[in-house]
Image (tube, rainbow, N blue to C red; front, top):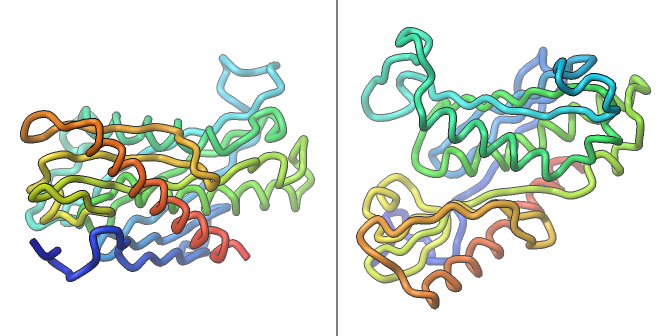
Amino acid sequence: MARPDGRRPDQLRPVTLTRGWSTHPEGSVLVEFGGTRVLCTASVTEGVPRWRKGSGLGWVTAEYAMLPRATNTRSDRESVKGRVGGRTHEISRLIGRSLRAAVDLKALGENSIVLDCDVLQADGGTRTAAITGAYVALHDAVSWLAARKALTGRVEKVMHRSVAAVSVGVIAGEPRLDLDYAEDVAAEVDMNVVCTGDGEFVEVQGTGEAGVFARDQLDALLDLAVAGCVELAEAQRKALS
């Protein structure tokens, strides 16, 4: 079965990383995976949370949100509902964990960086796009600290590896890379994979949406994801160069 946009099974959607999209944050990136667009901003604060003071370690965390009309129908703002939903909490924590894997917190010193990832338009893979874009915004925020001699170590020491993420899945028995919304809702197996630029795994989230899946399908999906993350790491490198 052909993909909705005619891509090969192992092909990413067009990926764009636009740095400096927002004026005020220490780092900002508009990341686009096809029709999915996420604004990632990095805000620097001197000092760390109370429970981390005196440790000599920095802190990196993230918050994720979706605009009311990021999707086909309007959803209420969670601030109006008076509570943050479980999905939002889960994705925020995933982004934070993924970005901390890229950072030497001791070299960061007692500085905090918050990554805000706001989905402007959703067409599948919002969390993976957020992680990929937030890494670049984080890198720019660390460079901002370095320019003010506020780091314990060099930028290369703090950002000691790159991190990117991509979705994979099985549709009509075929493993596919970087699912759009139409594919995501039809997937028999759905997986989000976070990798370093060297192809090592940070996190793997996968489920059989329509039953179980075999070891060879898992291996095929992981191979696709690693290859996709290597491509994304190169896009990050080019954006930062």
